[in-house]
Image 1 (spheres, rainbow, N blue to C red):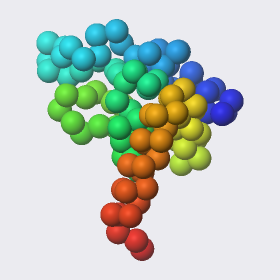
Image 2: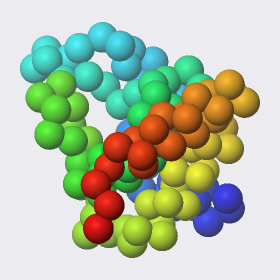
Image 3: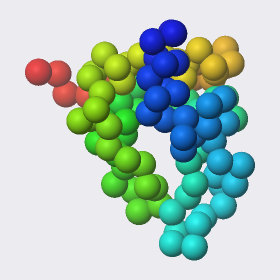
Amino acid sequence: MAYGGELYQQHCASCHRPDLSGDPDWKMPNDDGSYPPPPHDSSGHTWHHPDRVLIEIIRNGSDFPQSRMLTFGDKLTENDIEAILDFFKEHWGPEERAYQEQVTEQDDDQSPQP
């Protein structure tokens, strides 16, 4: 988890805050319709998404019109991204971790296998 925390501080904290709390107004759209960076602790919605989606967003950024998530696939390895995701999970409560584990398992069951 320490490695994921170091990577988070280096690559994510400037937008999502060092304590994972995100922008205080993350639910209020900016003038351009995009939203400020959300929290990655239990108060946000990161834990609503399966691992596959979170990894893709970190790697490729977001193509959602309301998001301005940057692309980190050229800066972070898959192991780095997974370490950051593990860091998030350590800051979620037990209910959020259980829910996110369940949606990840469901997503794994539905994803095409090679």
